[in-house]
Image (cartoon, rainbow, N blue to C red; front, side, top):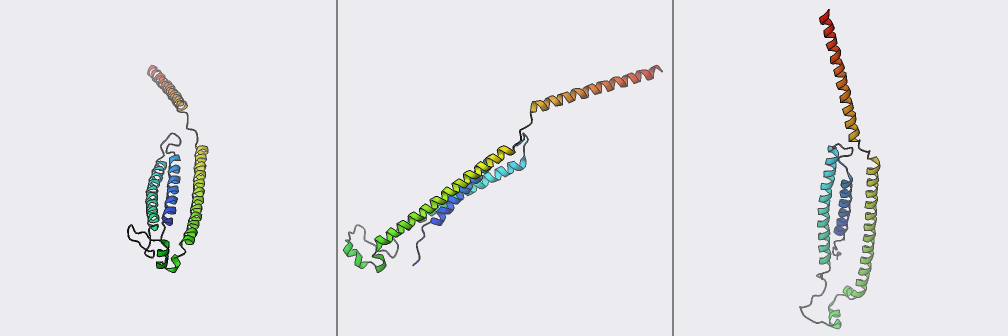
Length: 192
């Protein structure tokens, strides 16, 4: 007889998609579409795309987790091979044991072994979740450091405005001198 599904694959997959969604969301959060004071459309599109992908993965994660938990809850219901009792019937152990098939008689040892296997699986899943969380934190720290150290300071807008004003004033002085020289040449040409 095949073993009943417990929804473990869906639950682990749901947590994996949740972790990936969280990771992509954090990376999208740290993308700056205005790195030097000017708008960078490519970075804005990347940020929006990663944010949208993070949302989709989060939705898939919730669906997988819910499906896995439902399958797990159903796995606790009695199967076809287990004896069924009428509602409200009280059966002593002595009456129930002879009607059970031979493999079902040692249910206590089997249940203990199954519980121990379940605990080991749960511990392994918990260890996997801790590793995934550690990797996510490491990636967030790396992206934060990369963003911080590669970001160049934005130019001082006041200094740029002063330089532009100085250039405009110099251009105005050159134009005034040029006009004065042209007027002087015209006056000299008129006197001759």
